[in-house]
Image 1 (cartoon, rainbow, N blue to C red):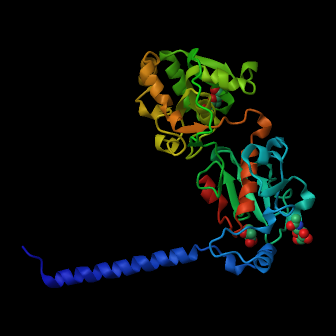
Image 2: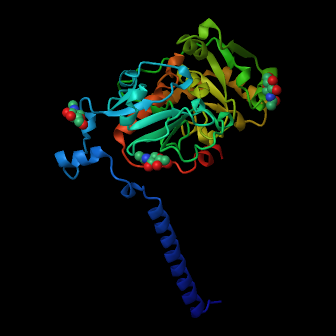
Image 3: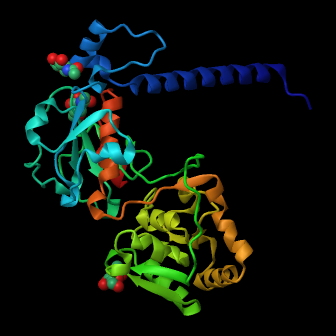
Length: 371
Ligand SMILES: *[C@@H]1O[C@H](CO)[C@@H](O)[C@H](O)[C@H]1NC(C)=O
Ligand SMILES: *[C@@H]1O[C@H](CO)[C@@H](O)[C@H](O)[C@H]1NC(C)=O
Ligand SMILES: *[C@@H]1O[C@H](CO)[C@@H](O)[C@H](O)[C@H]1NC(C)=O
């Protein structure tokens, strides 16, 4: 059977109509999502820059603020958890030097960015500023998971930038596995003294499913429980103790996309093999090589996982495969001094404000974060 010509013509015509329609919709979507900058008067420094310098078409634009005393000021409105560190440390720790951080609220009116920690905001919003200069961007800092994030009425579209653990934040905060450079110190395989370890902190186990899983696992394999408060685990001692375990149970307190915390990055950096409980494997693989950890979801039950760990424990060649990624990548140790818990987030906010100037409004903060 040969299909009739008129039918083919009709089909081609339909395809053209569909294609043009889809293209129009996509164009409109793109057009509507363009930043709204033309609607706002540009910040004063833009005008200054165009008067005084005429950048070459391809030359990177050098903001006058980057030089000398005129760096973008970023104001830290609250100290998250009252964990204070010297703000000048962003330069020493992360080589960030294109902005100036302050916690002095009298500099509010000239601040280009204001970092506001979610959990410190009062329910009636009375402890955050009422008005803001046009050029100023408010940055929503929240490192908690959605299950621990309190809903505060009125924050829906108050912010310009998001600063969270989520990969789709404007400013994404995370210790990352990075490509190894020749200057990076080589990986030192830590001496192993224990098989499976867990740093117990039951208060944090909101999703007790992981605790039940642990109890089941412990029936089949010995698990050394490390006490969070023990002196051995203070400061950098943490890395030698955790590194001395062949496997470490990196169980997150609740399961959310991208919510992969120091429970994972700490042990990974310490040189153990994390056994993870949290978002799916493919989510972990966005942040670390798939061969660097063991995922509980890869096993039908705790007994099967225990069997697998026992086999690896007695097969050094197979076990060492979990460390091959160190040849190509490296991971800096997260800070152990808790004053620095938010340093990476705060410093990154500063760098971002120093670098990028565009206007933006987060349309519906909770819809994005909580749903
Ligand atoms: C910084 O800006 C002020 C005015 O905005 C100007 O008077 C001063 O010379 C600038 N300083 C530097 C070091 O660029
Ligand atoms: C989770 O575990 C804690 C301590 O083991 C317990 O007090 C709490 O009731 C548990 N919560 C749920 C939802 O099972
Ligand atoms: C920041 O967000 C506010 C509130 O949504 C908006 O009015 C303001 O224009 C935004 N500012 C910038 C610099 O993007």
